[in-house]
Length: 277
Image 1: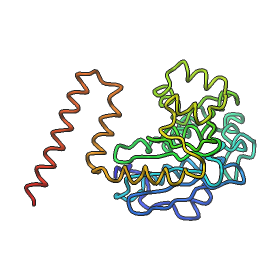
Image 2 (image 1 turned 180 degrees about the horizontal axis):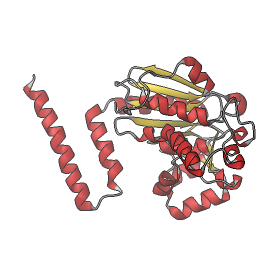
Image 3 (image 1 turned 60 degrees about the vertical axis):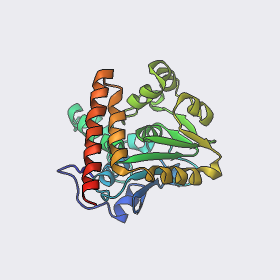
């Protein structure tokens, strides 16, 4: 596990998870993170995302798979809009009050957002495979959280929506790049600037979902995906994911060289293993 040098060393406590509207269950190589605030449609706050970052920084080293889901019949309605009210949410300061009253500079707000983004960025780590299990609505930050994962398994009632522009905002939780990478810039513009809902079948056609199943089949489909992923050698999976992540930015020649280097590393590891038998 890669851990930030200045990050926490202990996982979040149950109290911290509860305040962040999250549940965490780790069973051997599988960690399951559940957004747990169904009374507010699993809306999230800044504390949700900083606690997600904390989870990523303190996962046990043997964890290979992370599954993100929402409690009940909805993935997440996105940011709790109380975050934009003068009083904020549950002890968290409003995201706009500091700029409004001059107590926060734009640079300070950028630093704050950077901290929130850390809750999404770790899901791309090559040593993990991350799965979003989406039923019901995945709106705004919820959609971006699903986009942060390697795989998206959708129930047939899933609805994806990038709501931020309709609220006078921009998507700022690392979702714009994967959206453009998957659907292209023109379709991404249409999805974001109309803030329309993308249903499960359309999401699959666009490449935003790897699998669509009936709602009652979602847990089983996710478990099947987890089992298939765990059947692959961990080191080979990590090296392959790292190769795939750099492919879009590489020329063919650069990618071929990267493949050679990665393969030599794998062959050397296999040779060491054979010699040790």
